[in-house]
Length: 347
Ligand SMILES: *Cc1c(COP(=O)(O)O)cnc(C)c1O
Image 1 (cartoon, rainbow, N blue to C red):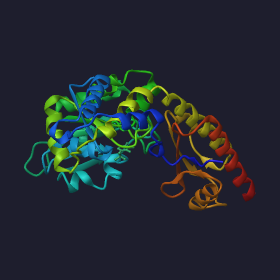
Image 2 (cartoon, helix red, strand yellow):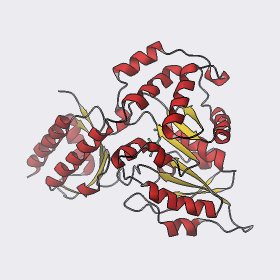
Image 3 (cartoon, rainbow, N blue to C red):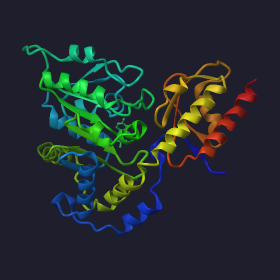
Image 4 (cartoon, helix red, strand yellow):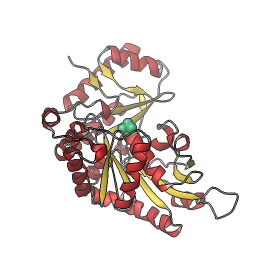
């Protein structure tokens, strides 16, 4: 029996069509502007996201960093959530490489930042203060459990940004999960922002890469920042080819991952071993907490791994499972059965 890998949607393998597209891709030196497949991916991203321009970057981390560096001069400040990927999981890149200071405010359980918290975090003009330049939101909000931000909310944040002449960046690593969950065009989720970074290598299953979308002048500067960070890639069309298939083939099926995640959450709740709000699962990410002391978190993860079910312990007594195209409804059932078996041994 194969391993059921629920650690992340980044474990997804390139599809057969992706492998073929990679093999057959026409390529050139993209740093010299010669790669037709990269250009095709960038045009496709423009078309899908509804922005003026787009740029292919090696990772979501670089997409976010490039965006922050374009929007923010050194010594300026970014307002973002304390559970933001950009704050927690990107090795402090915006400070280390961009000289940009993060100003965190609490993410609410639904992934949002309170409007009054954002308003209070904006610095007044004063010689003592850093200058606020950017607000970052994340959709879906990973660490809050894949929560979905609605366009209406993003427009409310936009009003604050406009009032203070701030830019807005969306860490849209999983913005397609949000669009599919809401049943709306992804353009509606991109529109309130000056820049949007979208991962092709998460649930969309491409092996490598993200696209960053925005206005032409923004993307021009992003190209410089990408070069500065060492992200200029030569015959990158072999990677972009898989990204094109990701955007064409892999979006609509995300609803299956959401259905499987909901089923998984309901099953986890039924074991009585964990505390979680199964109703709060909106997309493909399930966070849950250990609610028994018969077993430790790392021990449970290890026991499950021995039995072929992989997931992550993230923080004391806290776990994460993520569904993706490598996980079927049957796999969810199997994973819950295996968990039931482990629970039985603890009685
Ligand atoms: C994965 C992820 C990123 C970064 O993407 P990498 O390609 O792994 O660098 C950024 N933001 C969020 C919310 C993510 O989940």
